[in-house]
Image: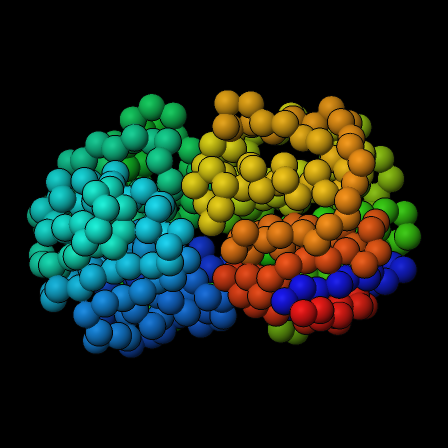
Length: 416
């Protein structure tokens, strides 16, 4: 399936964002570990969270997380200390996403895990039992989801967990988000110094918990406001906090450099928070930024900068190679269709110095990657009848993305 997208003349919309899948998935694991009755509310309705919910309910021996990387990492740790024997598997892409560092770490804590296929990759056969815990060292430059998976089970380990991260630490805000959610449920988990986190062996307290909405999803609306420019666009988003612990909330700073003003307000009657995005005059002509702490924003910002004619040098992108697809190559391939030549350096940097080529305007391929679809869709603002292949991939994190675009005035026609 392919969507043909045409944008309205300007943008004036109120959008109900999806809940944060990052917070939802952390809160669900904690809910399961606490054995409590209060299910977190305002849970994300995306594929990744549905996978976690189904896995926690399932009595089946085989758990299929499909393309959900977060679910694979978090559930592997959870199953390690949950009685019973399970096999956890996923999509073909998931079976090629390395998980050896997490498996080795869990084994060091006493977990019984075997590879059911290729060494170092899913699927995994896990026999769950009480784990001792203790001291552990792992590289700090691995996926933060590995680190968060270990932290989430820390309070349930007999001796707690003292986790030392070696070398460069990437995606630190996601680690801090995990610690913050854990603390909301009574865990004693904190940084001892710049490299070591201590989690006390104190079980979680189950309690009512409301999930904040998703700053990552907000990024695409920032992109749209930036691309509509001086046509007086305005977007109102609900359920975001100015003081959010979500690392991707830094999008409001990045886009302040690209011509978008952010303001916050609270409804005095309901207490509901609103975030308003408007265009402002003045933006940078060149942008340097290190995405080490917010790699999921890279696609949105890369596409926006090209469309605005803003040259860039972006670093901290090494993790993009092992996401749902190789996002560095995917960006290079699809932007070439739109006439932009960007180049990569050291598999961790992207540079655009206004290099151009003859555009083909072929349909954008999405590579089974939700963020490719959502970051390229706003290009319809500057390229009418932009086409996007396999638009259904947005269900991974933002299932109602296309209906929200229609509500905002975009014309979206389905082609076979």
